[in-house]
Length: 114
Image (tube, rainbow, N blue to C red; front, side, top):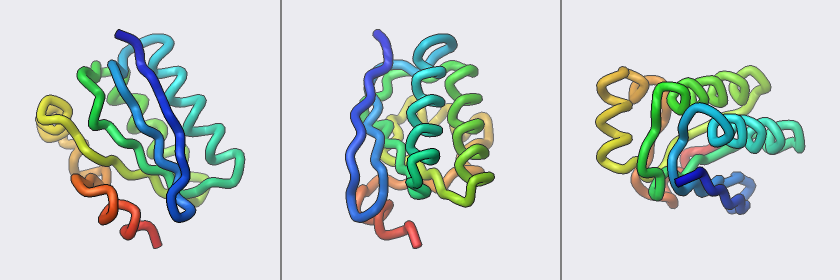
């Protein structure tokens, strides 16, 4: 299953709804492109909704981290929403959970952007 993305704006925040797998290859490249396109278009507040992500490999984790760094280096914020148990456990094991702001509630996540 490949990665599918849908983008919407809510209160000045770009929410990217992800579905499928974030893995080495086209999926991670597509995510990188989408995040950078949003930042280059002037959007500095990005929320990745991972509710429908079934699998992330090491390349996918690298892409999330790289996107986080790219957005931050451009003066923006990237946060994560609705991690599945599998993805949450992976983020805990790799200690990436401490790097990202992670939310289970979209309203709270949106409110967290200053």
